[in-house]
Length: 405
Ligand code: ADP
Ligand code: ASP
Ligand code: MG
Image (cartoon, rainbow, N blue to C red; front, top):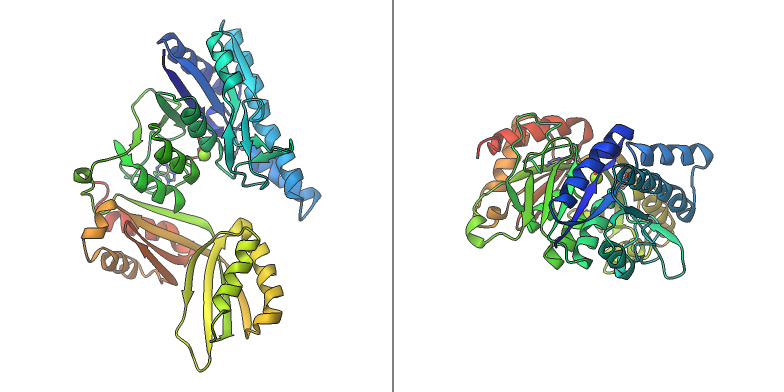
C-alpha cells in the first residue's frame, strides 16, 4: 500500500463546503488503496486577517507571538477536516506540526525543518487512520511553536512526503497546475504538463506563489514527485520532476514576478576595500536575505551600492543600514518599496545567446524602464516600477510566444 500526501491550500478549505469537498477527495484516494496524509492550510485568507489584527494591536509584534498567533489558523482546519472525515465514516486523526514530529530551527517566521520523527504518524497510518497535519508549522527542541514562512504548507507537505517515502505529493490549489505565468494576470497563459525541479525552483523563488521555493528544494533533494493540481476539478495538473538534458530544450519556459520587493541604495559610500563586506555581513547577521546587488562605477572616490530585499524584511534592513552608516559614512541612504522584480526562466537559455536582449527589447517596446538586472544560467531578472508589472508580464509572455507550445 502506497502513501499519498495531499496538500490543500487556503482557498481549497475556505468554508465548510470546501472542507467536505476536500474530505471526499481524500477518501477517494484512500478507497483506491492508499494511505493518505492530508496537509492543510489555514482557512481562506485567515492568515492575512490574523496578521492585520496583530498590526492593529502592535506596530512591531514579536516574532514569537506572531507565530503563536498564526499557527492557530492551521489548527482550526485540521480539527474540522478530521471531523469531516470521521463524519463520512473514516477514522482520522489531526496533528499539529509538533505532534507530527516536525522539528524546526529557532527562527520564528521563517523556521527551517531540521528533522521529522515519523514514528507516531506511521503508527496511526498502520492502524488505518487518515492523518490530517497542520501545514506551515513546527516545534523547536525547546518546545517553541514556529512557522515556516508564507506559503509554508507546501514545504510541510513535501517534507512529509520525503520522510514517509510517499509515492507522490499532490498540491491541490485554486489553479489547474503550473502555468507559463500567473494565469490571473495573463489569461492566455499555458498550463505546463511537467516542469523540472530547477525551473520550478527558479519560478517559485522569483515570485510564482503556486509553490513555496523551499518545498521545491526539498523535492529535488529527496526526489519527491510533486503533482500540482486543482482542488475544484479532477483534471491532471503539472508534474514537477527531474527532466533529462534532452528535454531541456525550451529556451524560455515561464515569466515570474514578485511584487514584494524593496530597493535600498547606499549612495556615495567611500570606494575602499571592506565596504561591501560590512554591509552584507551586517545584513546576514540579522538573517536578512539579500537578493540583487548592484555597485555602480565609482564617481571620484565614492560608489553607490543598491540591493533588494523582501518587503517583509525591508524596514529592518533599512534600520540596520542607518545604524551601520555611522561607520560607513555614506552620503545618503534611500529606500524604495514601489518596485517589483520580473523574470524570465528557462533551462535552454544557457545555450541561446540573445535571450536577455529579447527581454530588454520587449520591455523597451512596452516603455518599461529597467532599474536593475541580474542573470543566472536559467533566468534573467529586472527590477521595474511596481505599477508596470502587469503590462511587463504580458509583454514578455507575448515576446517569447509562451501561449504556444
Ligand atoms: P494556495 O492557497 O492553494 O497555497 P496560493 O495562492 O499560494 O494557493 O498559490 C496559487 C496561486 O499562485 C494561483 O492562484 C496563482 O494566482 C498564483 N500563481 C503565480 N504564478 C503562477 C504560475 N506560474 N502558475 C500557476 N499559478 C501561479
Ligand atoms: N497559511 C499560511 C499562509 O497563508 C501557510 C500556507 O497557506 O501555505 O502563508
Ligand atoms: Mg500557497
